[in-house]
Length: 242
Image (tube, rainbow, N blue to C red; front, top):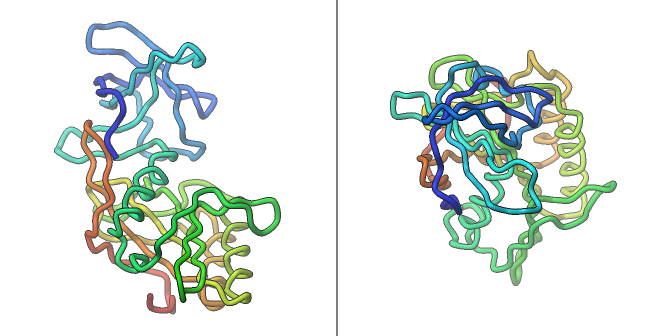
């Protein structure tokens, strides 16, 4: 997924009210950018961080910049916009680049299911059980090379796991797909110390047949693309294979 508008570099001054970030452009001008991330952004919102913003000229938008990337200034990047994974993954699904789901012909986003929820993608194909795919953006890393989810308590995420588990009882496939929006991680785990309820719900969902997939990303100021890089899941005890 290529960014619609070329990104511009900046330095973070502060993030506040979750969805706002004051930033300083290279020419010294200060602007306020929209931060499309409801999580804590632990380790990613330190004042002085080099970041990349996407400008926009949409008259309907009050803020003329959106915060897209953190630049770790060592060749690695983290994508902080939680809407990006769905856009990148849709492109990958339609291009048959997710091998475990490549046999499905139809990709439908944002389909209602469960109790007042929407599944990120509903896949269908002749002779195949429908596949319900929920996507989570992974940006937290507290240990070198290890990505974690979630970065804050997520009751909504726990609800999604419970609803996916209910889907399997109806004979459908249910998949939790974690997309690691970091280029510096090759392992993944659940942050059970941050949200033990989510970790417990994950274990229960897996026992009921919910599948899990973990994919990485290739990130640059030009765009974010899903990769088939092998990211290993670790530290989840007796988590079933697959």
